[in-house]
Length: 263
Length: 319
Image (cartoon, rainbow over all chains, first blue to last red; front, side, top):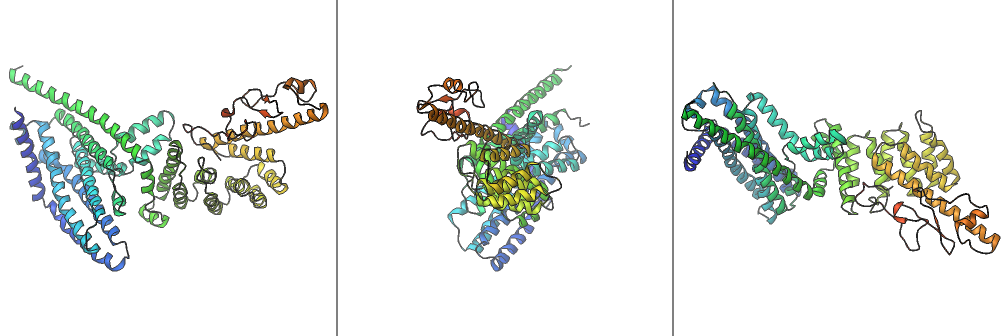
């Protein structure tokens, strides 16, 4: 099979995943987001003094992150199981499509959905910012960086959801992925605990602390809400880390899915 | 096996091989990147932790899991202090707010008070140089844990060492001594504070009680270092008094420790706690052989030499 064909097969699966998500009315969350943000922008203008920007950035970016994570988990966990239940997977795999291409295509389809969703939400955040501050400021560029980091978070969450769904039930996959999302947000503290633990326990704690996804460094919402800059090196490291972690989880999903008996 | 299934098998094997390689390489790369991220975020992580300083807001955000949140802030405080100390920075501005948030979230987290009593008050590079913040923290600790003699002890220690307020130190030690569960030294310390007497003995008792009252390795090592330093300071003071007596009796300074021994002032060759004999200098002063080997000594040093401090690579060890 040539690489052009392989890319087009992955692209086709990704596009279909995106189309299916849209058909499932996933983007309807944008309405809730728009209502939340416009309500907050109007309200905050009435009740807060000097912290309008802070509240809009905090609330907007937190909502982008949480909405996206929920979508990533609930779509991600059903990507494989739904295809098996509806028996459409057999049709796909009976064509010249490899199992790994199916997994990778699904991953790109889901992340694509989230990128589109996040981009639309980002427009909402900036419109709300413009409404409360009446103009854009230089420091608003860091809000873009925070949004980029949120997309990197989604890369990892999508990969994890797909990894768990490759061998577990949808419910358990959702539980595992959400648990890792929570733990990952405390990853720096977990490594802090590991550092002060002695002996074998310390080694085990360190290994676990490094294996769980690190979402702490990807969360710069408070920082940018205060107008603080994000170092260029952190942008680079976070990008590399998210890509590597997603690659690790997807490789795991591929290895499991390759061995899975689908009959 | 048909040729077609053989081709399929080898393709599957190839995919497995590539996926396994990607898995391990990305795992190793991810960990290396994470280390780099940790390295550059050491201080900023602590700063971010303090974007919300209100314990009331934090309590609501914790959804009732205040104990866990307090543990997390406590770990951040220890990490922050250790990393700032290790990097040679004398800037510990975030230590006080980190400990305040920790203890407001869980007022019964005793190690946080003990850490604050030991590392908030001393001047940089061994502490934050904030005796006032240390005092407020300890008073808050005593208020919320009135049955813990260790907190009275730490508060009394603070009054004695940082504020030289013997009356308040005596009062606090006496309050601690009256508790149902207490340490036998508390009443002795209260009496000594009231008398302002026996500086070395009092200091030794304080550091010994510090050592005895905690399991925190950094604080214990700090107490050991100070006890050794006290021993040297006391030995040197005593030996210099002996030299002075010898001079008064003979009209000249002793040429060696042997002269003092032959005159019956000392028995054997006096040595420091590390076993190295003290040196008698031509001007009658007493010096330690290796001034860098015993931290915090104030006596027995060559003229002009500063009090030796623990190296940066070691855990923070100062009171």
